[in-house]
Length: 165
Image 1 (cartoon, rainbow, N blue to C red):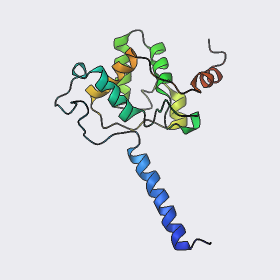
Image 2: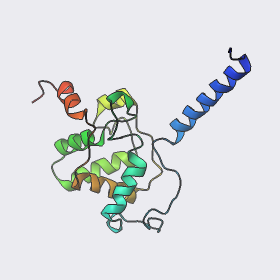
Image 3: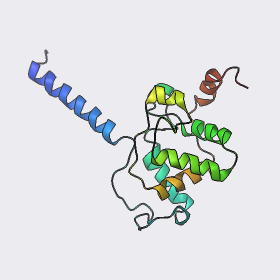
Image 4: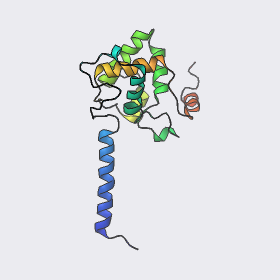
């Protein structure tokens, strides 16, 4: 059965709308939800528990930095395991790691980016709706805990960094 021009346009319009909405909301959670009591004002990263930071990470960051992706081509942003490794190698201590990653995540810019390759591949990370204490809590959680990497990440990293040791 042939699809009429009207149906094709309607289907195309729905697809365009879907991807527009996905691009608009994918890497940020604009809802002000109460996640494990995180709707208190003002927030300080020290008052956010590790479990709450883990929830914020899962809800806000893994939308783009999905550790369960089956290939590099499925991601909207680089894996957090790779980002963590890069920040750890570029900083001398925990405080500097947290400060630099928090600063970039709160106000992303090409000039402040430590990872120029992913900027070329994925574009600049959009500004998030999270506040600075929430971002700092997530970054602290990333530093202090093992972050899952996609199953393909180890091999990808070897290929991308051949001869750089």
